[in-house]
Image 1 (cartoon, rainbow, N blue to C red):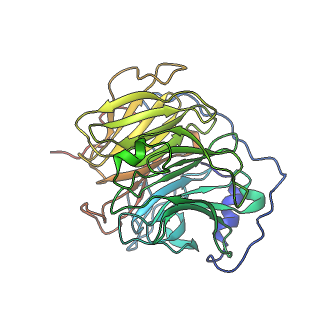
Image 2 (image 1 turned 30 degrees about the vertical axis):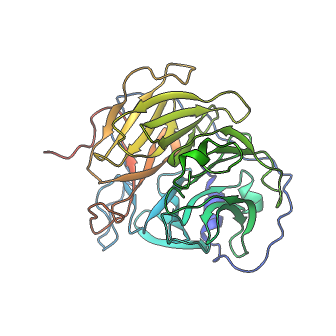
Length: 366
């Protein structure tokens, strides 16, 4: 998701979440963005839009492709209209607004339970954010996983509760489609049987058409049998929603249609490299993989959700493990590193980096 610069500035001044809120709906029209052009495979590695030399400091990375540093357990990155700012959800409950080479600002906090692999798993900003300031979050509590919403300075209110939690499989993902539907990918709670059971909310891709209601009707199921660490992505101008997930037998990239229709498999990885994030730009779906680690690009046949060829590597282990991805301005892909949570962190980790397009880019030398 991308935001107008005015909205980005407004949220940076927001306060930590507490108190009560009025969640009346907004009638204002959502902002819109011009479609991005189709991605090519010859674009050089992107850099920050700033041309000034970087200052020295403990949380300043001299690599011009690094746009945020010193994060803690980042689970989601949301891009803005520039490559200078991002929103990051940290697993412990903080929502951070980052500005390149400036201190990170905590703009909100939601209480979560991190005793398993859960916590603050994902955030999405309301399509009407410039008017309603609503932030949606997928969180783990002592009793369940759930979707809540809040404005900075106010208490979270539930949107969807009762998503099963387990000793593992609690990671979920949120995405607002271009028409305002909230899509939710739920963890399987470590139970593939529950994921296959239509009566359970575990291991599903769900669509909530009216997420402004505090007690909405049960969401529509648009995919079942979802594995662990499912990540949602969509091209900012619209189109299919893609789901990258870790299955029991293979990792899978699927395409789903929130309005209906059967999901389709785009690509499978029998070697199970540990898919963790995805982003769409033009005819390419980028996926991050924890085994390697690397980022690959799956190119689609024009106008379809069918892979045109085998995935191509676009980033090796230059930045270590990359987790969740986001589509930034002009189709630039941004990724949050996950080095503090089991990788080999450098002093400026964890970071948000700009991902190069093309094949075999960004690999560290042997």
